[in-house]
Structure formats: C-alpha cells, structure tokens
Length: 266
View 1 (cartoon, rainbow, N blue to C red):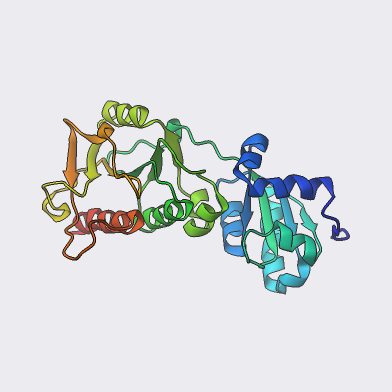
View 2 (cartoon, rainbow, N blue to C red):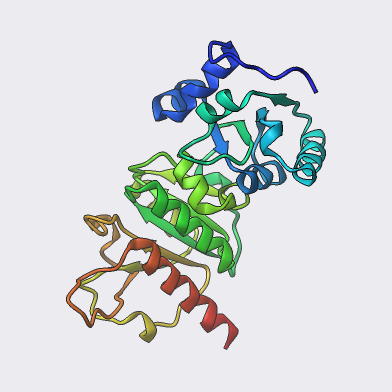
C-alpha cells in the first residue's frame, strides 16, 4: 500500500471533504459513505465506488483483509490516510478506519422492479435523513421490494440516512419523483395503495393488504398531502390510546410493513 496522505490540502482529500455537505454531493454527483459495515455493504451492493480511504491503524487485520478483497473485486484502490486526515473525513464521531466515495446512485422510477406480489414503501416529504434510513432498514428487514420518495425533503444519500439504514440503501432500489408522478406511476401499474393517516376511519388491522401493495407514509410534521386522497387509495390509521396524537414515521412504517408480512404468512 502507498504512503499515507497526511495533508488536508491534498486535492483528493479536499474534494472528498466537500461531500460532507449536500451542495458538494450535488455538484460532484458523488456521495460519501462512512463506517465499516456501511462501506462493505456498499461494495457488495449497487454502489459505484470511486475512492476508498483507509486509516490502517484503526483497522483490525481481519477487517483490512476483507476490505482488500472487496476492493479488488470492485476494482477500487485502497488509499491510506493519516489518523488526522481520517478524523476530518469521517462523518460525526466515527473512527472505524474506512470512508468510501461513490457515484451518486440513480433514483428514477424505472429503477423499481415490477412484480405481481411486491410490496413497496412510498415516503412523501420525509424531512429527517435518520428516519429515511431507518425506514429503508426496516423495509429491507420486512422483505419489501423498494422505497420510493415522493417530493423529497432530504438528500436520499445523506450520510445520516446511509448510517441509519446500516447500508441497506445500497441493496434496495430507492427512487424519487414528485408526488403526482409517483401516484400516476402507481395507478398505471395497478398497485393497491394504502395511505397511513392519523384521521383515517379504518384501523390498519381491519384491512386485507392486496398485492402488489404500496404503503404510503407522510412527513413527520405535516403527514400526507391531498395527493393521497380519493378513489383507489385506502386510508388506514394506527390507534392512539395515550396523550400523543402520532408516532414517529419510522415506527409507523415498521408496524405497517410487518402487518403486511404477517398477513402473507397466515
């Protein structure tokens, strides 16, 4: 392995550091992935790796061996950096010894597979990257086929979203479009649509979820827009027996995803 990069003024390091900001990611059409597990899952999944920075003193020998094999398979070189440089590259307080730069993934609706028995999640205007990532993680665990983001209010591949997904963002198709475009796309392909609403008259357990099935969830602050009202959409509610009037959107997602899975297994 080559000598470590020690300078924050190195052009490659400066370019990577700009990816910590959404504007930099947009300008470069690149994303930054921090963490051992997330990096490995990105290399094993659908990410297109461009730069792989490692701090050898923070990596255990088995980790470095596994990373070297994954990097070779994806034809990306390991670039060693000093601890000081790595601490600037790493997002937050993580010090797992590896940061990956990858091309921004495609997020068009045509990325979503068509299947008669598929279940997908549709997230409208979810604001918090951590919630987005947590929903993708839960969707992966519950066996959903994809996640579609309608009128996105956050960067789909924000480092916090990647972290919260545990790298599942690189193993599940994720698409984004306007709410109107997503609804038209669902209608033309014959999806059965179930929208989570606090004011819905029908409890989520009183519905038989027919496939192909789209579970639609709204933003943390505003819920779903009027785009998800009308014919062809079944509104469902989770009962609220305490003083609060809503759940965190990622919790609601988990309840609904696993209800669909439970019904499938009956």
